[in-house]
Image (tube, rainbow, N blue to C red):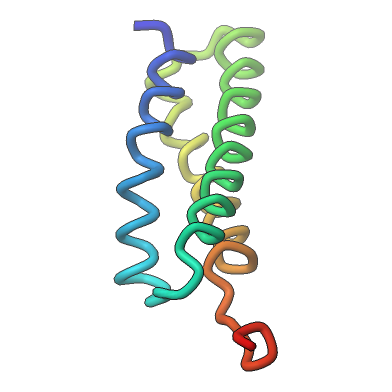
Length: 99
């Protein structure tokens, strides 16, 4: 399977599962689920785009082995997405926002 197609399929499948698990167990947020899901999806898209770009550079341009490069890409994107989701998707609502 093409590495870019595999990357896209993995992101699409993992995004929904990850949202549910993060909302419930990691960030423990239950309010505004549609907003949070949309925000989470946007962050996931950014992560996918970043991983696709890094893979294109390292595998497509420099011809490095995709199986060796992918764990490094995952680590970079994981850190990026976690912090974006912490700041955007799962930010705790303030009393003023709840009104």
